[in-house]
Image (cartoon, rainbow, N blue to C red; front, side):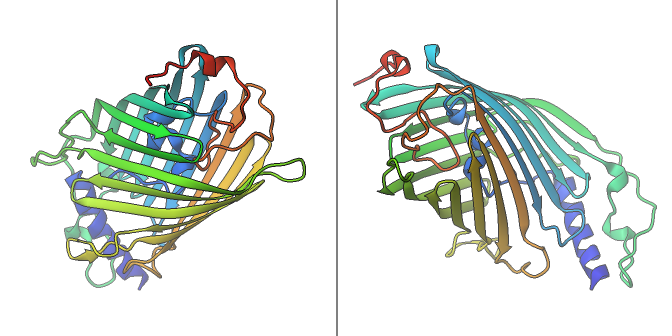
Length: 353
C-alpha cells in the first residue's frame, strides 16, 4: 500500500507541476491571515499588527503541500490609511514546485454613514514560481512492480519565472456585519514549463458575515457572541465555498467550518472537501490559533487532513479600554469599539452621506 501511494502521488505531482496550472493556497483560518484574504485589511487593527501563518496539508502523504505567510501592517489615523507588507511561500511536492511573493498593500477608509465604513484596497507584489527538475520523477521512471524510481530523465525547460502582479479589493463593514470582494492576479503572465502556454488564472473572492451579540460586556464579564461567516473563491474551473461560525467568549474563540459545494462536481468529482475545527486563545495583545481539517473527499483516511497554526500580535494601540466592544470580524481587532466616545480619528473620517 505504501508503494502504491508513492506511485499515485508521483504521477499526480508530475502532471500537476509541469502543467503549471495549480490553484492558490487556501488557509482554513481565513481571518487569521487577513492581508492574504484582502488588501482592504491592511491597517485594520487599532495600531500595528504582526501575523504568522503555517499550513501543513495532507501530512499523511509524503511531500505534498506546506505553506507559510508573514505579514505586518499599520494604520495611519491622520491619513485614514492602512499599509501592510505580506510574504507568502507555497511549497508543493517537497520543493518540486515553489511559489512565493512579496506584496505591498494599501487601504483607505471612508465613513459613508454613521458607523458604516468602506475600505478599498490594492496590493502590488513581486511574484516568483520555480521548479526543481532534480526532484521530478516521470511515469516512465517508476517501476510498476514495487513503485520504486530510477534515474534517466533530464528536464530541459525554464526553471523559474519572476513577474509583477496586482490585487484589488473593496469591503464594507459596520458594528455587526461585513462584506467584501477581492480580484487577484490582475497581471496576465505565461508561467508554463512546457511549450503549452499557461497562465495563473484570475481569482475572485467574495466574503462576508454577521455577528450576533448575546451578552454585552460589563464589569463582571466580556462580550459573548456568535458570528456567521462565508467565503467563496472562484478561480478558473475550480470553485470553492466555505461556510462557518465562531463562538466568542473571552479569551477563547471556537470556529466550525464546512468547505465544499454539496451539489457541485469538478471533473466528475465531488467537491465536499473538509470540516474544519478552529481554536483561538487570546493573551492580552497576543493570539494563538490552531485548526485541523477533517478530509471528506475520496482521499479521506489517506491524507491525514491538514494542520494550521497562526500567531497574531497587536501593538502600538491607541489606548482604548479593554472593555470596549469587539468588532464583528473574527480574528481581527477593528477600530470600531461600540462606544460613544469620540476620537480624533473619527473626526477626521471623510463622510460621503
